[in-house]
Structure formats: structure tokens, C-alpha cells
Length: 433
Ligand SMILES: NC(=O)c1ccc[n+]([C@@H]2O[C@H](COP(=O)([O-])OP(=O)(O)OC[C@H]3O[C@@H](n4cnc5c(N)ncnc54)[C@H](OP(=O)(O)O)[C@@H]3O)[C@@H](O)[C@H]2O)c1
Image (cartoon, rainbow, N blue to C red; front, side, top):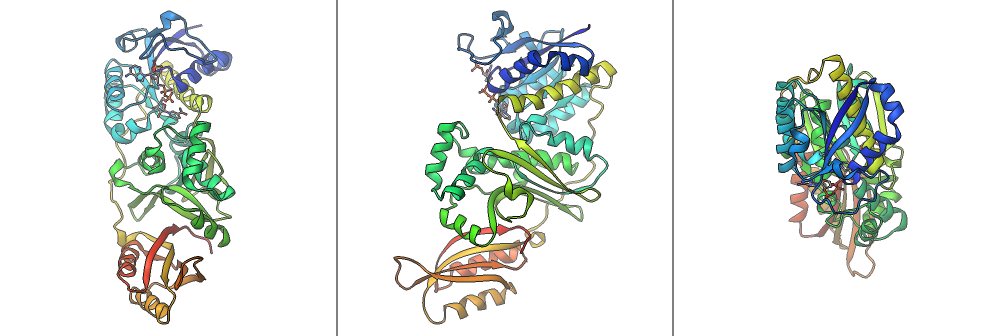
């Protein structure tokens, strides 16, 4: 049987999972590609580091020299699982220019430089696949490019960051504060020691950019995604959501209407019967709406050695198959659609507002006149006294649908209103009652 050598840049969590799959699923992989795919060399930083994965590579399979992978003419596909942006970009560019196809799990890199790298791949007749960069083990990119290739995608909503979904699930279920749950997530390995990119929404934004590029065939950039994280969410907010029949999730949203797109990552209140509301803990899911297919949802583990490795090795299978068929690099084309980002006046939603106001005559009249001025009506309005705060009431409002520019003006007007002590929180509300 023909032997096909692959090289790997990185042999950490995902790399070890890839080596394990290549060994444990050898027979199935041989059947899939009609060749014996083997790992020839893996680049690491430290040869002495103890490696605890299921598969231990031989000493001669690990190297500190990138050229032993990138410059080896026998290596057909390079798997990049080392992370970082600059170094990985340099190595992937070099690999593609050497005529090697590349599989990467690197969302940071693909969100920032995906278009440039795909062009280099196409120019060199090589494949560049990156299924593992969005939602780990869930085959959502291939779902878009192959399974839904015949459809026109109008909306994608994803829980694409396991850390934040874990934190919000536990905060809501156990009524525990953000910091406490984050610490627990770090101890359990669901959050990094520096969780900033996750909790501030940047990791999810990278995935939204990648999804929108593929789903809308449009050169979307990371800076086109508006980003808000979960750090200011309180257990009070979550309690109100539960009372009102909603679930609060960090959602990556990409929506297209009349050729214009909205790209956002933000905490969003979803009705409890929304398919994404039931996605718990560290799990990921991507809900996709296509004009023809209607609603679909992809669900599964968004990270972890073996789930992520399944995505990487599946890309490898396609890359090797393409090589054997002589069609490497032929799937890549210029984006079909020009990028047009929706202005705030065309972004419509309902909003949840939690206000602390003076508990006095005239407060309601002042509030309602501000809403009336902007022509925004209430879907719900509830008032409670605030425990321990004399003369202060808490007002929770869900508005009817309004545009984002109007809502921003409304918030400004509320801030400057004498009877409003504080806007405690505000979230976008998706659909439902
Ligand atoms: N972990 C997940 O669940 C997951 C899920 C989806 C996507 N990803 C993506 O997959 C990629 C890898 O993640 P990971 O969790 O496997 O990372 P990791 O455990 O930190 O492993 C990184 C590997 O790359 C090597 N490496 C890093 N920088 C290097 C450099 N400059 N030169 C040579 N070798 C270098 C490290 O060498 P040493 O071993 O010698 O330190 C290590 O083997 C990242 O892009 C990540 O975003 C990960």
C-alpha cells in the first residue's frame, strides 16, 4: 500500500490526539484514503518535556527544526497544531509555497489571515483546511461548504466558546457568582489560566469571522465583529432571565439580509425553547438557518484532544484524497459576495433593561416619556423594591423590537434622566415571547 508522510507543527494537546487517531484508527483511515498515512516528524519547543499522551513518538520523530518538516520533500501535508499567529503564519506560508497542503486548528490565525493564506494555497495548488478552528469536534465548516452548499445561508448563531458556556451554565444552575465559577472552570481545565480571550468574547469573535467568511462567501474581517463578553453578568440577571422564561448565553451571531451582514458576539437572552438554550456546560452548538433547509443545528464538544483531532484528521483525509485525485487546491475560489456591514439603523432586536430608579412619584411618567419619544414600546415591565436600598426600585423592561441606533439613543437618554440611579444591565433578546 502506498505510504503518505505527514508532518506536524506542534505536539501538544491536539497534536497528541492526532497521533493517537492516526494510530488507533489506522485501518479505517487506510480504507478511507487507500493509502497508509503516517506521522513522519513533529516540531516541538522542548525535546525533554515529558509527554503523557496515549501515543509516544520515537525520539527521531520529534524535532526542534521547522525545516525538518517544511523542507522534507516526502511530507505531503503539514498539520499545524502549535498555535500563535506570527510563527504559524510564517510556517504555513512556507509549507504552501513548498507545495504542501496544510491542515490547521488555529482560529486566531484563520480569523486574522485566513483570506491571505487561502490565496497562497490556491496560487500553489494546495489545500488549506481548518475545520478544527471552529467548534472543535463539530464538523460545522464542512457542513456549510458541503452539506449546505446548495443553500443560501441567512443566519448563524453559535455557542462557540466552551469556557463561557460552562461559566454561564453553572452561574445560572447553582446561583453562584462569576468569579467563583470561573475559578472552578480553571481548576477543571475548562478555562485557561489567562481566560481574557474567552470571557471578553474575542475567541468567539474569531469563530464568527471564520463562519461568516464561509457561510456568506464574503471577506469578513475580525474587526467587523462587534464584541461584548460575559464579565459583567450577575446572578441577579440570570435569575430574572429564568423568571421570564429565557436563558442567557454568549452568542456569536452572523446574519445576512438584503446583502448586508451583522456580525456580533454578545450575551443574548434566548427563549427557553430555542435550540441553543439547552446547550449546557462546555458544549458547543451552531444553529444555522438556510433559506431552503430552514433550521439546522450542529452540536457537540467544542474542544479537547480527541474531539479536535477528529476534525484535524478528517481534514487530512480530504487533503490526501484530493492529492490522490490530483485536485488539491481546486476548491478555493474568490468570495462570491462583496462585504456590506449593516448600519445600526438596520440591526433590529428586542432588549432587556434592568434599571435602579428613584422610588418616587413621577418616575414612571419620566421613563415612559423617554421611551415614547423614541417610539419604543414595552413588551414587559416589572417593578420590585430593592432590598436594603431605601427609596430605590428595580425596574425590569423587555422592549418590543427596535433598531440598535434608537436603542443606543434611548440608553443615553436614560443615563441622563434624573430619576434613573443606574442602568444595572442590558441584553439583547432573541425572538420568542
Ligand atoms: N486544545 C483544544 O481543545 C483546541 C481546540 C480547538 C483548537 N485548538 C487549537 O489548536 C492549536 C493547538 O492547541 P493545543 O491545545 O494542542 O496547544 P498546546 O497543548 O499548547 O501545544 C502546542 C504545541 O506546539 C508546540 N509549539 C508551540 N510553539 C512552538 C514554537 N514556536 N516552535 C515549536 N513548537 C512550538 C509546543 O511544543 P512543546 O510541547 O515542546 O511545548 C506544543 O507541542 C491552537 O491553535 C489552538 O487554538 C485547540
